[in-house]
Amino acid sequence: MSAPRLSADRERCIGAGMCAMTAPDVFDQDPDDGLVLLLHTEPPAAHRAAARMAVGVCPSGAIAFHEPEPGGS
Ligand code: SF4
Image 1 (cartoon, rainbow, N blue to C red):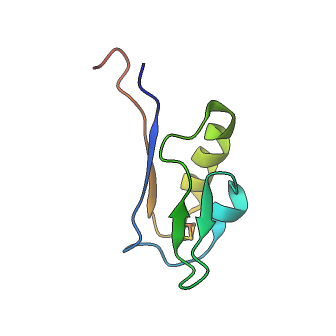
Image 2 (image 1 turned 120 degrees about the vertical axis):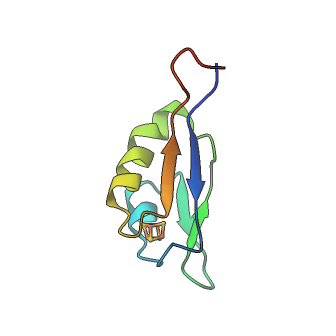
């Protein structure tokens, strides 16, 4: 079974830090430029709710959650 995958687009990220504040186990901020760092592309189940919330609060739409197709390959 495939797990949901996260992606982060550092070209779109504006370094607002909402993701790292909302889901610190999944996202961090680059200490140099403040842009998003993805700690888990396939976050463990315990962190998925926070990761989804972070996607919702990101002001630039730089992060996305890709849910596997139900029953898909
Ligand atoms: S919340 Fe969005 S804009 Fe802010 S650091 Fe995270 S990915 Fe970048």
